[in-house]
Length: 294
Image (cartoon, rainbow, N blue to C red):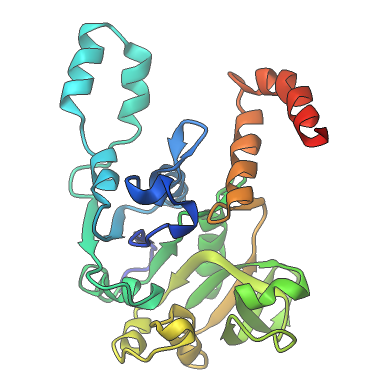
């Protein structure tokens, strides 16, 4: 077992049905935030946290993700012939080191837990990270890097959490906290999408995990949870008491890009932060305001 978090799993096999018809032919993870797809931001966050091996759990129709992180020889040749050095430099940031990426197909849509289980042979006995690409966190120090800091101190399982309104807890996996220093809380229990009024707290898991390999022993049992799927939350809950388990309140601005409004908000926030287009967006704001009034 390694003493470093070297591997990350990206579950990217989902249908993206909330973004139809766009996702009829484009993977949800390839939808752009300004000029980079969601999955690229997730990979960048993992790189910043020291990740060395990137595991993508894909499905049918997701080939564009693998192509994105590969060389595009025809495009690169044309850009080179036209001396488009800036464009070539931008493309170079999308390429992963040779042998650093693995693509595994989830052959049936059996839930997030099943998607993670599909990575078991590549993960082996190492602790590993999981990033859900449609959850974005904007901060100069990425969410996963903040979690790695906590893992270096606490070990075991780490989940990222954020406080959500009480009337929205039924949409999330919710943490039952124990000892809590205001930033890192001990996890005493987990509930996946609790019924209204039954949540043990308003601390919702937000798509970032660091997990010990013991979770695979629970996932292989194939027990069905909420929605008739194999839930990662249920498997993690069964490890409580066997391995240390903590929740981290991360710093940064969170965007739920699985939601159309959250996706548009992320585009605005990232666009406004860009030196090349931010000022122009500010100029266009009156048009947006007029649209709201009409």
